Length: 264
Image (cartoon, rainbow, N blue to C red; front, top):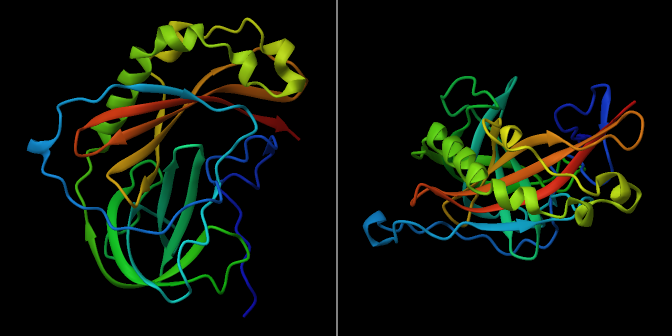
């Protein structure tokens, strides 16, 4: 059997991503060993944690995690479950302290009985299974022989609302941020002096991207306002990432960066 190529959603469209931003499905290669998530009683957790604002330069996109485990390893995964056609899969996004998050996608070998699940409304799922990469050419993609699975609680609306609220709370900091310092060299001059309007940071669209399988964290992504045009056919925008702590029900970190695309 020949190995399958993986093409992220939208790759066949008339847009192609800039080299600095190969989309939300790209990852940092230094992920550590897997670990299951230990449940922490909510009553023992502090009611809130300080909200951290971090930055990432344009051109440092996420990239595939891996290798995570040996071929055939039995693992316990927690991720966001979605379906595309006949394929059901888990999206995992690991948060790394000194690098962009890395991603992995795990295709399940059987139907788990949830029916079609849209990208916008994933199900938080725990899967125990055996892993294989034999049919994939692309790093970060795995097949899973499912042994058992469990749907886990996740209030998607609350997670999105918490991300929007956290963005609003950081409006002043995002306006004072030196966006030119994050820009690629060719775009520094055109980015200088950019200041996102408060209205453009309110009511943003939030997507649930992936779950960190080692902790109760969900990665949500936000497309903010466009930056001033610098080159023809190139669109760049404020990109924000929220790390949402499920047990606490709050965003604990926002990362600000720049993403873009070029019209072919």
